[in-house]
Image (cartoon, rainbow, N blue to C red):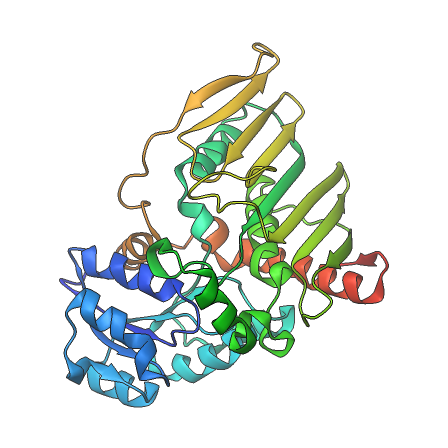
Length: 357
């Protein structure tokens, strides 16, 4: 559906990634931010300044925002436990919806979200790591058969903690983190907090993409963290497939943030195939490849992503304009399998035993 301008609204600023998504919308030549909404006006002030919004475009009632601005696309960034609730609130307005990761708090909720949209409307789950050139290059090498059949995926994902940075990765001080921590949804179990729910979906969803949609049969998970917290800060999850095991590890409390200085272990993926291996690390400008023909690990340059797959807003509008389905981690098919694994991991950690999907 070709449009001269796509009208975009940003609703619910629980997750600081809203600022990143709105910036992408503001920079798109065929998009216009028509409104933003959040129950806490102070959380919208940075966006008002950054994108030159008028007070007539700023709302504390999402319904008034939708009815007044009539957007084509809504960007949603609620707390992880409220994704289903917010999609069901927005869906009746007949808009396309992009939800910032993770997919949902449970597989049942994910299915409810998918079923809530009217026919012809798109639901996209944004996984920011899909837009890292290194991981896209890794997928392209896998898809081209360079390492044969994928047998194992190892993922390490995390950062110093979710409160150390805001939109566009602007750093906060230790004092700011300490002040925010008691009231932050990231540290509330009932709101879907914890490193496992924050980061495991990256590994399981991207890993499913690398494995061409393959599901594991069972999952084992263990978690750890500060005893004074009600959520985990570290998890290790092992998934059993017919071809072997994959491991997904999440960590709040890495020594450095990967977008400034890669910590050890490095954040990213190592992928073993029947004919070779690939290591692909977050924010890198190369991937390292081994093959039967050239077993010495060697660097493969990574080009910058180009339109229409350089960022999630650009990609969503491209798919809508050309009436083509979403592909990769942002698609419901791949994201749903990632969610299945996350659900199994949550059960496994709670029961302290291996569980089947």
